[in-house]
Length: 360
Image (cartoon, rainbow, N blue to C red):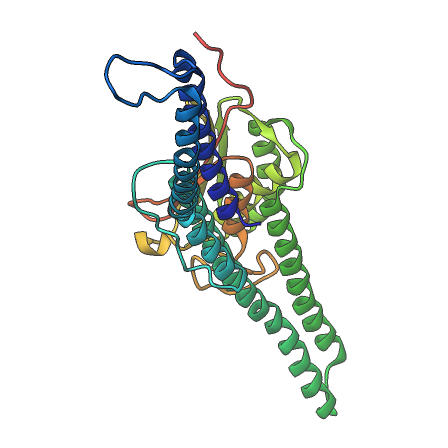
């Protein structure tokens, strides 16, 4: 039995029971005052007694009950259909979504009620699913293209080497090693990005300022080779998260700030701040002037901030800031990119305090 029939029978049952109770009240509370004897009057007029009234009342009561039953079923069917119409629209939208059409929306009009709230939540869910699927499809296409490139390069080098009798085997091995290294780094970056998006990690109190100092110390040789000066400092800041992922976040930011310092002899400033609303990690670097519309796309997967020559210091897979953004979001934080007026980039990662502030 459908929900509409259940509601219809429920409405009809309420109407019939109400009618039975009303008729019973009439029979019990009114007819008891009429005597069940022949009533004699001073005038020649028929006066019905209780039995006469009951005989006349029962057929009328049966007719009334039949009318009430018909009204209950008909009106209940119409009311149930009207009330369940929003569920039908939500169900059709769910069927379209199951078939792969995520662009359809319920878009329910009318006053704010439970059905309207359900439809709005369903529309919001469809919107998020559509955006997530579109992002995944775009990411999969970009990842396939990026992973295909080193494989195609390896195949081309092998084919050229096989047809070249004077090939340099050592040089070929070195070049294949470089290409394979880049493919491995890209795969590891994709796995890290997926791990951050799925939030499959444990959390614990982490000293953000200490991890920043460790990341800078690790990347000092790279900065020295490029002639970049790193200045690290700030407040002693703590967050609640995964130490490995937070370390990767800071390392990616400092690494990007170093390799994007063009021309040489630039600077990188790393600061941690504890503010009333959140904890902030700020990484600034000198470099070329960047347009705001270009900065807005840097956190997208496989978007590179500048055309540069790939070397041993940087494979250029285009996932550095994308990983940073996903890790920040997985820790309930956010990433803000701002171009600096004199050139370079200001990157701020906002993370929540490890413990809620005391009330009062």
